[in-house]
Image (cartoon, rainbow, N blue to C red; front, side, top):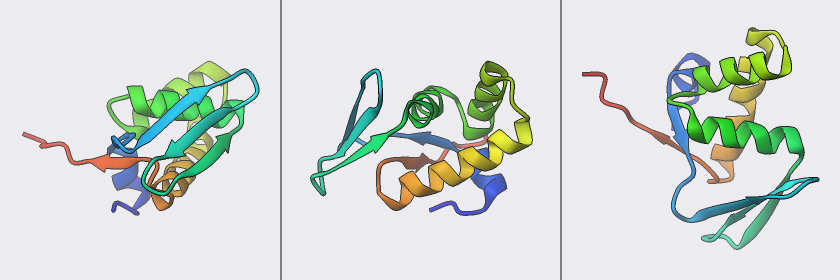
Length: 101
């Protein structure tokens, strides 16, 4: 697992096949089918999950979120790295190794 912030910012993060999620008005519910555990995300965390899943890497997801919410990029990058680490610890996302060539 990638733990270095720079490595994680450059990595592609996605939901594995054993994770499903659904967004509601007040929260996003994420279910890990392997563990049977549900996780509730507030609207901001739900949006972060959606953007990370769509973006080519975490850095570009941070750029989208910073622009969308008119926030400082460095602060959003730090928050997104922390968020992704928490999701990785719960096996709710996985880092995809991209061949640089």
